[in-house]
Length: 133
Image (tube, one colour):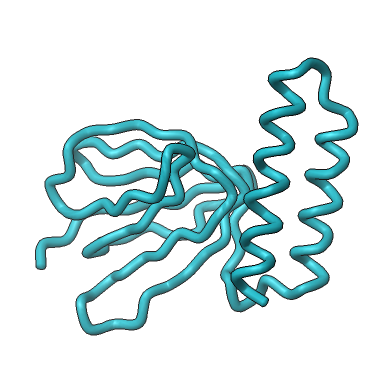
């Protein structure tokens, strides 16, 4: 299978940079998989799990992202994530602190659109908590 360049960047650091065979991205309109020669697209990312497959036979790497943007272009895929953490490091306590942070966003949201957006993110993180439990 053909590979392409993938980079995952957070405000703190570059988490991943290298050739991959596929990446599943939790887009706000639904999950989508990027393969080599994918059509150019830009998408926002909802809280969820990115699945990175470096080789066809290798175990996929799974990372929880809190949100951000994905840019697929002829050079590859770049994800700018608000926050990212390996699923193996995502403890129940850490996930609960994510829920508390988003609940605070809901409480502090100014306006109906901001509140609806924060409510949606809260639901997505709670669903992730349910799936990972």
